Length: 273
Image 1: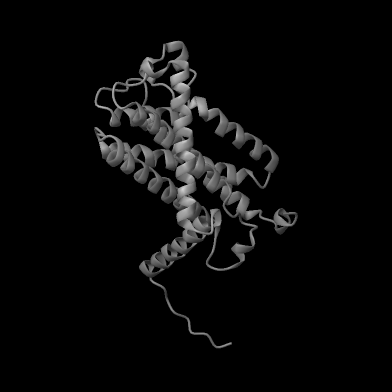
Image 2: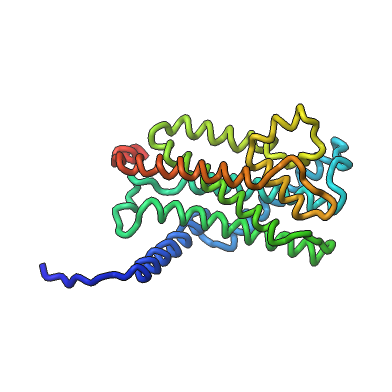
């Protein structure tokens, strides 16, 4: 009945929001596995398994000569890290709690916080996995050299940002067509096994084949990353600006769709789950 009204400053409100995002991120990290360290190790094992699978495939098919001059394993890892980081954050954001989730009944929780927590938890796991794997490879096996490390890290973050944008689009569509989104997201992830260009570089493709891949922003990101990683590779047919523009467009579409979905949220969406 008696309540003291206190004004909250903009800075205090911002710090309060960041605090909620932090705790939500920790909660999202522990959803994948009870122990965060074990979850990180499992992610590293999954990444290394895919790396070794591609190394064996390159050896059996005789494609090793098509790689960039430099460390062959680093060439493989540049593609795998970007691909895994991208699809993991797509799945994390797409699977974040929607407007009809019971968690949304607890103030100040909202869908923006849930999406941010899922995106940041995915970035945390993938970035730590990348750092640990590269560090072990550098120390225990052979020293590696990255030509422009800051720009290379920027490409990793751009792939993460693209994954966030794609995940928000899927998240906005999921309540309206859950079956379609489930199928289409699986197709998107499987198609990017080839369409992302992990196994080749844009400079080596003829013009007729290049047109099959240059629509994909992830293809541009991986090719640009290899240009920043290897001294002897200069990408001529890819552009990180294109990937950034597509990411921003998808983010705007996803946010508008998520806002519309939130306005029409119904508790019946989660009744059967």
